[in-house]
Image (cartoon, rainbow, N blue to C red; front, side, top):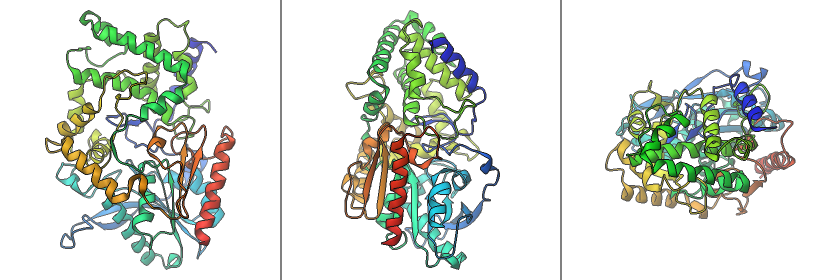
Length: 496
């Protein structure tokens, strides 16, 4: 298929795209959902579980602090038989969507196989689970992975009292991406409450400069596509160096404001956004999320690389701009908002009805105080240039939350996180750790892990959390086999 026909079909189908799930990139939130997008909806999604609420403590680690708040959760008992297990899916850095309990593997495969009760628990500070009156930096001190794990522990005790039918049930926790890390850490910290965990695409080591993210992106795109992006980046750098060419940059990439290359942070934000177009497609490649077009296939590596490698379609930079237009259209954005100060201003919003409350401010805070995970351009051999070094992301922490959140603070925070949870040296029992070879996050995962009764499952050719999503006729055999292996391991945990 030639370039123009490919682009026409993609843009036409994009008009019918289901936009309830959009992409989210560290430093560039592009929608209201986190790194784990909800599954594709079908007719089953018409009958979703209703929201329920539990009264939680604001601070689990201060016995004299008696403040409480209401946490949202959802329950599906469609497959449950008394005495069978409870599968608790932990929410992550976005709104908890009950579609997980009627679609996806936990609903269609694992729960029916083991007659399990399925529960989805929303993470504090995300969705409608608001522990504090707003998201001021002072109030965000209670947004930590430790508090979230304690929420889950308290919830298990609460639900056992609420529903005596599960008093003798074994609990297994599930999660993907950040919530995958939480699932593994839940088993680590509360083994008396949970029998095991399925931790999909879980980054297990906190790191400030996550430059290897782009190494996986580069490898997943392939050498020909990589070379075309390199050419585009080189052509872009030449325009950036010539002030007379700045208007051409603005018109080529349809920037919301007149392009001005005088300010380093604006340039970093601009080029990082262009790289983010490719990062998002790679991370979620063919994953069967609720991002599907009418044609039945989403925007994939094949789609964007077909654009980039078609040498009949003018310059590499023009093709780079075509990819940008495609992503803008799919995400219903009229233009590329590249101004750094506007981004910082939006991330400083603290009200729950603000755009920042859709997940951007909360997750940025967590990266600045616990994880880092800054996807910089510091890797030498990658095609996007070196316009957004790790210092660019460190600066965001200070500019959004205050001067206290500097590099020294972040180093101490990262050290604490890895000391607390173990990093790559964590000793996990009864945890299965699926990762996909295309997923950039596998660079921080445990992909060769066989400690005690835990194991890793490395899935060739699949992307972020692919094992969690509904079955598709297009699923490769490697993914089908991995899901069977996960199910068998769940059975092993329940028998142990």
